[in-house]
Image 1 (cartoon, rainbow, N blue to C red):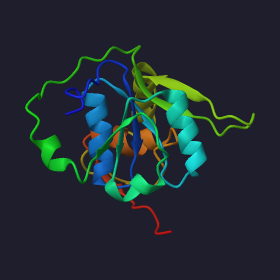
Image 2: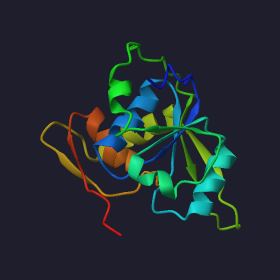
Image 3: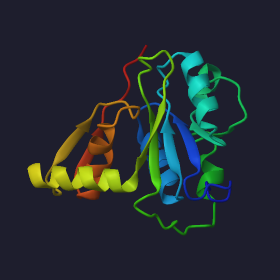
Image 4: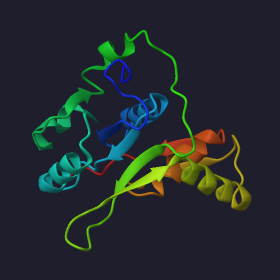
Length: 179
């Protein structure tokens, strides 16, 4: 579906979803399409989300219907993973984009200690090197269960979500706490 919407190599796609299966579907879909994800924590203030969306210039934003009212207006096309699922699932284009090590995998925004958050582009090779280091220290396998508790807006989430899946382990996603 994302490829049909124009996502290609290094297209930045915003992701503002609650911690759920929808989150994993969105992240994996972006990467499979060849895009790079921009995590937008739904607990962030609306003005911070607006800045991050504007600064990254994401043409597409994956979200959930329940979050639409919290999101700032903008030019990004919104795709609700829950509401739009029948249309997404009906997509016929199923090929996977080729990815190079130098290609951007995701953009994490810094905390903004200087007053303005800054987007940091992380390449696939950076992720692969991190995974290699984790393999040397922890290993992996189908007998491992990993509780994913970290916001996708923090780098360590790639360990919790992607390293575990890539090693055949089980990811248990801890849901967001009700506010």
